[in-house]
Length: 107
Length: 444
Image (tube, rainbow over all chains, first blue to last red; front, side, top):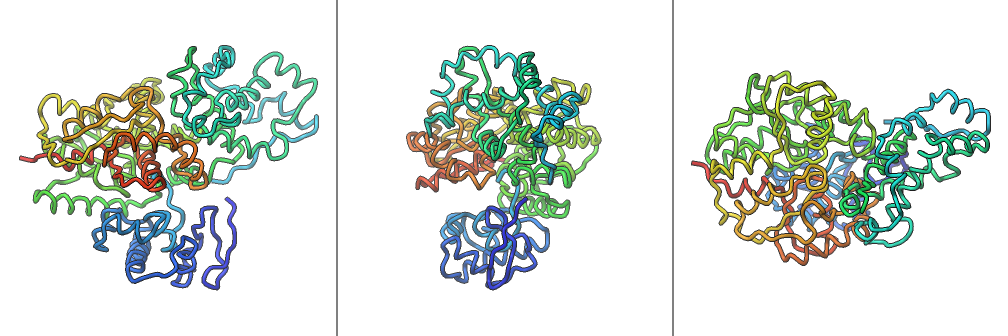
């Protein structure tokens, strides 16, 4: 698979064709802000960070993203709110900004 | 998974030697293809009925999207290596299979077919272009040009037994969460039994119904609880899906299938109930089981729809349709409707579980694909194509029904329908079928 190297948050990071970063260890808040800007999110609010950090911490523990139902429950947001925050949706939006590798599978 | 590119080298010697020996997997792949291919090649009259009915051609009526034109790309190679005249001319004037970037273009075109089989339903001679596209995709796979997200999915299935690549710990954590949710919702201890030897029923949902969405599994757990069934899931083989079927790679297809057959046999279950994945069910029921891939199987196979519909028919489930008051429509997933003939069962379930059920236009056996069929909905790179070309009419149809909820039987359809709804600014909720049961079931 061909990866492209782009500068995110002042670092050179490999991304795949869909824009997911391939070196999750290099992720920090600056990287997240730059990834968010690509998705049209100019300002990361505390709500954004809450979702992003929940996904990130879950991923660090289990190496997959949490169930959508769980994400909504633990961050106390319904699915529409998450779509309002991340217009690309929980997977392509929030997980990408949280620095997860490309999610695979049907969903 | 990185594969070496199997281009046919230019130059007479290299090409000729490999042809003679027929050791080239590319050639072998074509020659091993289903005999249906030969039949289709000989019987196609190029009348164009398929194009009138094709969702892709509807979205973009030009030559490139024409099913016959797409299939011609595959049949050209097939003719070259399997027919007398094809071999004859190739021996005298050998030409490379693909020139310049044609292999990449060929790969792109094979992934412009939704493999929904609508063409087969309308073709006067019954030509199924999805079979031809799948052969094309197997060649694409041999050249290592399968789209990365699908290739990664099959790779994950090899490594971990599920498409997401989740570990057993992650699975157990998800199950624990779902059990807690069940407890919170119903106030009862509804267990999801794991790895229980000698259980009667082996339940096999696609992994997305455990690791991404919880509602379908919750619905099924409530059903099993309501009828007091003796059931289990496996913590190793919990993914009833099949990407090998989509990528055309027969080895992956069989491996993914074998994985959960072994698990079911090991636990000694008598009935395998499969969740809402039409690919896995079609491979399991109509290929592996009927075709005796692994000999006679010591268990029966049924889909969750047939199982639940049968329970509703016999009055074993108590459902309260007032729990689902919003208008609901059903989108037929290609693999269940056109692939397995499961059309009535999901409708029976939805009619029993919802107060206001509406038909979607072009439903049933000749269903209109959502535009994400054949693995396309997992490809982010073709999103624009899915929204504006292949999914164009589905958006119109969903709007026509005026429903608030679209229920469907496939996770890939769900992803695609969700994206279409957002793209075309429709405030729709997309659900699974057992998710509606999860809302409506009355536990006594």
